[in-house]
Image (cartoon, rainbow over all chains, first blue to last red; front, side, top):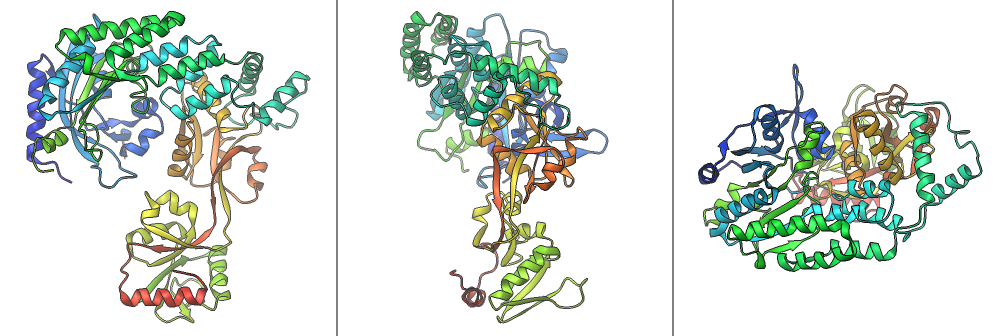
Length: 366
Length: 232
């Protein structure tokens, strides 16, 4: 599947649009060091990206997206505020659907500007809406920050909250944890027996054999202590789980969601900062001429996408074309810059468009 | 017009495959000496025996270079993306049983389930600064299994042999490998997670969708299956 000239022209047109909006065009190497990407995204990225090896430089990866190299470039020598745009091929292994291309174009727009996050979110979304407007797409929005705030607002231990936060992007495991912390599923028999043995003061290491491997006995003991501590905690109250479920299943027009969450926040003050962020973003969107009263918002949107989106998330879809991937996706990814910056985070929001799909929808041939 | 049947070229897997066909009136044998990888088929016209490494049989089936093949279902699932759109499992053969499992050190008395593994991996990454390593040669199967079960903060390290030794050598913290008796695991102070069964494998007769199935080949297949007492 080669990239068609119309798609390439479309990519250049989109990049020119972002340049006109004030972005500096940047490039990124196609061969990226694999280690950074693997550490960041974990084993899943191996299934989705081409890993190859270089005799001198070690494992390399064919650029699966531009986000990481652009963030790294910005961290190395960028001054804030900064706006970047790029256009080029990305490479994705396709293990399940041979109909999907393994090489396609992406045009992106990334904003590193911490002065007014709501305004930066709105700026990115409004630009995407503008440049995609002739295609009549459906926009979806969400906010991972609301989910995080809802979890942090639970009246339970810090450890349980952190466990839930860690799995926001894995809804199945998140649900399993919530069921367990909420006492909805019984403690597994083996865990129960282990806790009972600890309670009786038995030496649970009696049959454990020698120290074996890098994970030390002290690490095992630390987790045992954590398990005992957790077993002594009461389950998360059913009412709180219910509220969390309500928040997770909100799916309405943006102003209604903001109003709903505002009501919930009366009893769950931890939600307030997230609701205020939502309100400020909605105002910023409206100020840019976005018809927010018609904009869909779904709290759980974006949960199965990139792990490091941690605030505003959005996507643009061609209705009636379920066969096509989203035309554009984006969001805020402060968490990613924090991991890449080893603790130093830079507020960052951006998104990508797939020019081939734009060109296809414009009526050009596939 | 011949139907090519790919069979493991050595060891017990080959012998048991020969026995299985032999018990059903189809004689498979090596044509020349022990070192020659050519075979012959008695009892059914039009079937050619191709002796191959068990690990290459999935690839040869997917490419359609052989019509039928005998190999473990673990290898088929590991080596072929979207395997069920490329090969059909005609019959399990009742030997070559092996379970693909995830095992951790006995020392980890706090870990019994995937849920525990996930929690231990999170703590391990915080403590050591890198993801918990699982040694395996079944990358695709393990990755998909762990994704399906929502385990995070791990990485797979490749191990093509002596996988159980990687923990002691500190090149991995856990292993994912096939086992039939669990003997090697026990000897290396490892235990299987109670929900750590990834795949139950056995030798299986497979058909390649992609092979040249002309009228002649289809007729030969029907005769062979009838002789083996199987439905197409």
